Each structure stands twice: as structure tokens, then as C-alpha cells.
Length: 236
Image 1 (cartoon, helix red, strand yellow):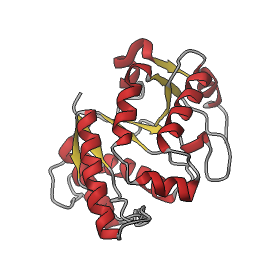
Image 2: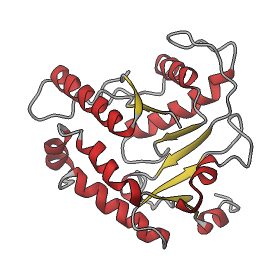
Image 3: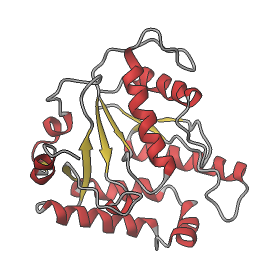
Image 4: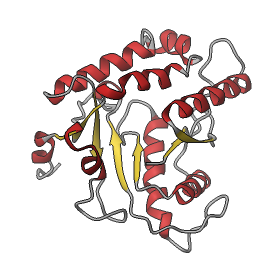
């Protein structure tokens, strides 16, 4: 698969040592380095920290990237998370994907519509809880043990965040935090040593009802959470 990597925010406010402009330059270099580790095509950020809003100008810019990349899979944030930038990023990704084939919708810069079906998956929120402290159950688990070192290497590229996260969120080295959360999800799966948790978005406007490309491609490295599937039939 061809991988596209978009960090909506420049991360320009997340530094204790540099100015916002200096931080943005450093974070761009780090993001490009991480994308290289992952073998991904990097797209420049289009917002500043705390400025990812669900508005028309931002949606048009995200829409242009979606049309240009024409993805068959979108991996995005949880629609419920502790950070508003994360939830707004999820909403923008979903709406931009929905508008990908609307001929009358104009993106910035202009890009032609695409009718390529796309399946959207939402990541587990940080700490597996939403902004109201409620647990968020993964709909599926992906075995990441074989790529865990590569994930650590890519995350380690973002070195400028280390002191800021330790000081402001008490994350005790974001690499250790990622490793611990990965092991927790692996344990929760009952099968994997390291795992990621994902929830598949409703198919309307995006793809066929049964489309689940991660399951098709990953095979035994992909595990449906039966408890989550049972809960889908319950009214909220």
C-alpha cells in the first residue's frame, strides 16, 4: 500500500525552549523523518496547535489532500478523545472523505473529485478513555509486535516533544508510554503481545457495508472484538 502521512497541526506551541516559529520548523523536520521511517508520503501541516477547527476553510484544505491521495483506507483519530484538536481532526477527515466525490464541492487548492471507495478506522483514544473519563472499547485489534520497533523508531523522531510532554502531561517519556499502552491493548486482545485498537466508521457515503480492508489484508494479525460487535445492536 502507498501510505500518506498528514499531521494537521504544526505542533508550534509544544516546546519549552523555542519560539512558536522555531518549534514549527523543528516539528516539520521531525515529521518528515518519521514519515521516511514509515515509508510514507508526507504532507505539510495546515494548522497551528489549538487551531484545528471544524470550519469550511480547513475542510476544503483537508478535502484537497483526500482527493489527491484517493485513499482506500483512512486511519484517523477517535471522535471521542481528551484533546479537542484530535476530535476536530477526526471530524475533518470524515467530512473530507465524504465530500471526495461531490462534483460541486470545491477544495483548496482545487482538486478533481474521486469515486474511490474508502473505509475509515478510528484509533483508540489516549488512555482508552474519552473526555468524560469513560472507557472506549476497541472494535478490533491489530497485532503490531512485528512492527513495534519501527513504531518506536518513527515516534522517536519527534524528540522535541519529549521535555514538553514530560513537563505538562507527566508522560514519563512518550516512548515508554507508547510501549505500555501497546502492551495493554495486546493484553486486552487476549492474543497479541503488542496491539493497536481500531473502530470502523459507518459505511454510508464511503464504501460497501461489509468493506473491512484491514481484516482482509492483515489476516491472522487482525482480530475482531466480539464484545464490541454485540454492543452495536444496543440502543445508546
